[in-house]
Image (cartoon, rainbow, N blue to C red; front, side, top):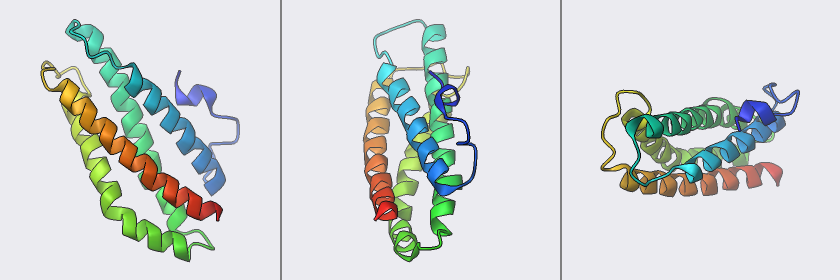
Length: 145
């Protein structure tokens, strides 16, 4: 299911609560697509479609986080603590984004023809996403506090 199909009306705003809601929805879509990846040998055409969907979710999720949610957190009116924490987490968040971009570059298009490293790359992506979710959850807990 696409995130757009389940985003409640009004969540297209740039208000921080709406952006956080959208981030959680995008996160769910990404995690479902990642979980659905079949690592058994399959024809290239079947695997490409599944990987393209995963990569599109990666791009959507990371772009929303970096360019909308984190920007809104940096400018939040009561956000001194948020800005400090976000600054502290910038490098670890960037590391997770780097891994996602590398995965997207490797598997996000019809040019992908090799899958011998896919299980390793999926595990690396999963580990990066676990780390990112923990970092984001720290930020969002600080926002709620």
